[in-house]
Amino acid sequence: MLSKQNILQVKLILFFICLFSIAHLQAQSILTDRPDQTEGSSTIGRGDLQIELGVLIGFTGESGNSTRQILAPTTLFRYGITKGIELRFLSQFETAKTGDIEIEGISDLQIGTKIQILKDPTKNIEIAFLSHLIVPTGTTELSLDKVGSINDLSISHSLSENVGLGYNLGYNYYGVGQGDLAYTIALGVSVNDKVGVYIESFGDLVEFEDHLTSFDAGFTYLQNDQLQFDFSFGTGINHTMNYISLGFSWWMQNGTNE
Image (tube, rainbow, N blue to C red; front, top):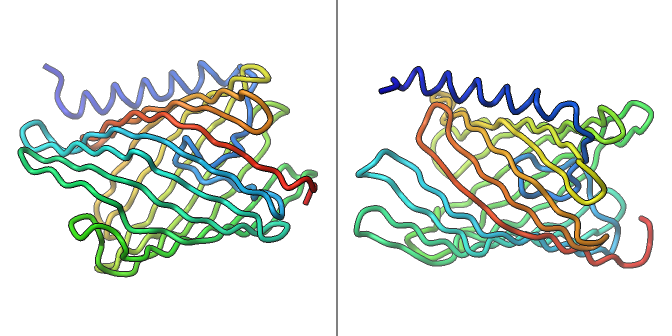
């Protein structure tokens, strides 16, 4: 049997094989904030409403003590206040089962904003800051019971006409302890006008001590200018975690270009 170290090496090798095997494809920047973990650096236009909805099934922990988590649905509402600034609401219904114990209910509501700091097409760079306030409004067993926050600096580059690179650096605080540092880096590639694929590495420095790193990949299908479907899957590299997710994003434009 493979040791944990060998399994880690195999996962890393597969990651780089995937990276270089699609690097020659034509890529597409991901303009929505799903399905990857990397928050986009673009904001929606003034008066626009965008709904990003998904279903996720995930497993964490070792066999015999694993937790199954189902988020069905998780819903992000994005509303453009003005050019470069959007208001955001995130809500999700969660089911968590460990052994014979099952908990279900509504997770804490997140209210936040995304502000685009820089957009320079001549240098192929966009920068945005995103912050969510976690409001303890969820079901008792699922709520933090404290106010927390999720914060990200989001940066993206257009490497070519069809290749995009995005990455985040963030700090998350959940009401106790020192909080976590978080990072993501995603490469997006458009196969054609309809289909895009991505691969991504992401992780957390939990309480500034324990480093958990993971990998995910997926694809998007653009049904039309306002509707996009997505599929993704992820796995832990130095910890036990797996998930699959399906979703869609619906953009309702207000008719202006702002």
